[in-house]
Image 1 (cartoon, rainbow, N blue to C red):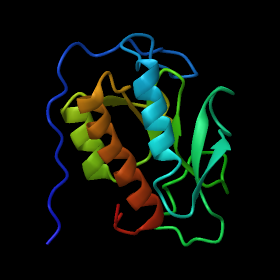
Image 2 (image 1 turned 90 degrees about the horizontal axis):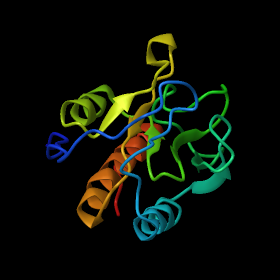
Image 3 (image 1 turned 120 degrees about the vertical axis):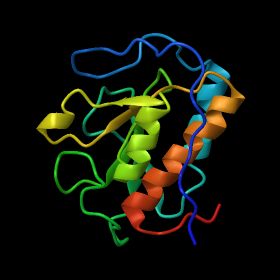
Image 4 (image 1 turned 45 degrees about the vertical axis):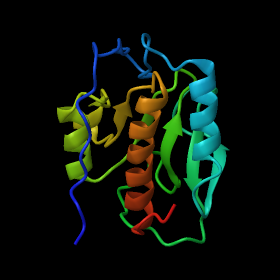
Length: 159
């Protein structure tokens, strides 16, 4: 039996997030060493995923891209434009946009780890997950990336 996805309550104030596109985080950014660990982990951990320039965010953003030869778990697991395989991307501030299952999304929002994309009500089913501020946060946001990967692939991550 699969256990329910649960996050601890995020400590501290919610960071400042831009209210106009692109949706980025302006306070509580990741320290450079945490960002680098996050980046390196994202692009070395998942089978059949490669690093690509984002097709939707600012040029400094890097995307997790599911190989085109892989089956998809959910057709709505990928960012616009249609036909792409970008399911999560990392901003230089350390925040990510990710697409996850509804119950994971609710847990992120309820426990103050992120906010919906500003165009969520227009069909952009992305969650902005706040940047990790330290090693503890890093482990928590990694669990969200894993859930995004699982939603995109339909596979249970074995890491």
